[in-house]
Amino acid sequence: GENVEQHPSTLSVQEGDSAVIKCTYSDSASNYFPWYKQELGKGPQLIIDIRSNVGEKKDQRIAVTLNKTAKHFSLHITETQPEDSAVYFCAATHNTNAGKSTFGDGTTLTVKP
Amino acid sequence: EAGVAQSPRYKIIEKRQSVAFWCNPISGHATLYWYQQILGQGPKLLIQFQNNGVVDDSQLPKDRFSAERLKGVDSTLKIQPAKLEDSAVYLCASRSAGEANYGYTFGSGTRLTVV
Image (cartoon, rainbow over all chains, first blue to last red; front, side, top):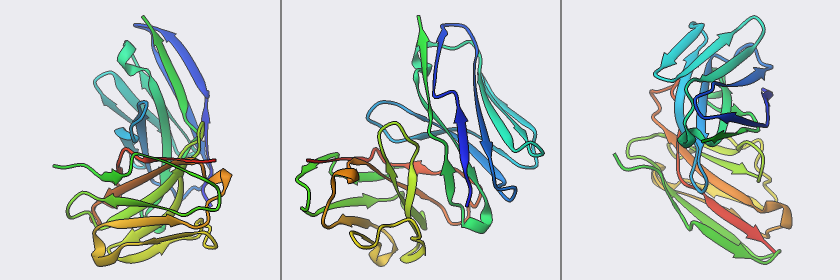
């Protein structure tokens, strides 16, 4: 089955700096890669996603990149703010698994004011 | 649109007791998932439903866990008997059947503590 590894497990940045979280996946059939943000006491919330036919996608301060050949994808947050502090999860999904997503173990991002 | 509703929010039970969790997905969402999230880890799939049928329950510990989705709407997840290692947050998520590549909408989860 699919295996997703996520790094780093913790990340601390100064407000205004950039943050990068990286994930690798094992199953070349995976074709959809969502990113979720989980705040304390809440369920994960989808913040951005990327499909395998696209190399990069941007939404305001967040962007995702995908390298299918190397089977890795990354989340980039620019101009970080204290409210970006949360746990971020990457996931890999493919249609032949009926849309089942396999998650990484998360990155705890702390943005210091 | 209303989100995914889960109850209870918290539950504390003794080992060997039984417990049940309830999930009401977003209206019209045909696909429903139960995930287990142990502290410090990512969510792990327990079971996936398409309408009221099971699509994948390969990771469900069937000797103690059971789940159903009668009428293809609400779902319940049961643990009987509970073990200490079942302490986790149980997340329910749903998505529309037509959104094969879309992300999930998660509920807030039920935090289970087994003592």
